[in-house]
Length: 147
Length: 139
Ligand SMILES: Nc1ncnc2c1ncn2[C@@H]1O[C@H](COP(=O)(O)OP(=O)(O)O)[C@@H](O)[C@H]1O
Ligand SMILES: [Mg+2]
Image 1 (cartoon, rainbow over the protein chains, first blue to last red):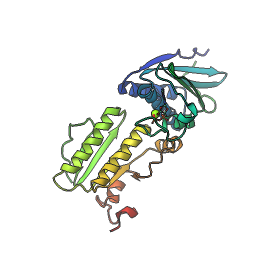
Image 2 (cartoon, rainbow over the protein chains, first blue to last red):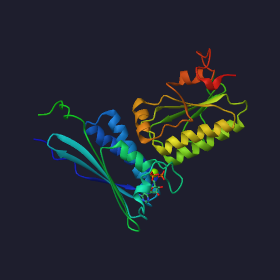
Image 3 (cartoon, helix red, strand yellow):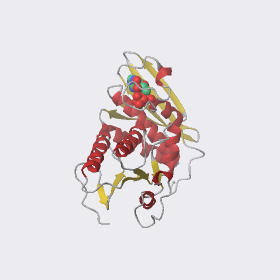
Image 4 (tube, chains in turn cyan, purple):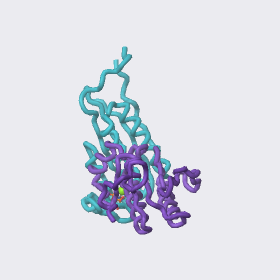
């Protein structure tokens, strides 16, 4: 029998130390699910961009990390949540190079390119939630020492 | 080429290798540390006892470069250029390079080399420095 998927982890995003911690935790979860090195690197990079947006533009928040299992497929879902100012024009925010300050404006659009599934939900004055999901390529590798 | 002691001003070691500054980035880098490093390198270039012949930033120990760190690297190179000093970013991991391109960050202003030795030769330093393999070095 398989163990049930790991429960959802919720990590705070309130400082740049938290950003480093989120990157580490996402890396560990992705590696544990059998993601290849390039896919891990892409997902961790996307997570870094989105977590920094939560911190810098959203005024802080949290990320919810969920392991998914659908048949033989295994995935990782990350939801970045804040109760900040929200995004008034999502299409504009998703444009390469668009920034309301400081950054390169590549975070949102770039993160979308780096993952398999991307959704953005934002309400002006209420906050922003960005959710990304990646699935491990191919079948899970055989586990050594499994009963 | 004797290495001077690491500078404690930032938590990233900046070593003087002859007249070249060698910066080694490793593992998790906090945003504030990266920003301090940027100031620190400019300061070192401006106040070095002898003119700095170049800056090599070794990122072979870095697992991800996002747009924040990418911008810092580009700005370090731009600052150094204004101070008449060339910068070479060495040892980018293939997975990082693939990810940066997909992220949309090609960092056109950055000169790169596969490793530190080749970065040093690009700067006309180090053992295999017969001729810089980069057009930027022609004089
Ligand atoms: N969580 C968020 N809350 C509010 N605004 C956001 C959020 N994430 C992104 N934005 C807006 O979208 C813009 C583009 O984001 P991004 O592509 O990451 O670029 P950058 O962070 O470099 O500005 C930001 O400048 C900001 O205006
Ligand atoms: Mg951003």
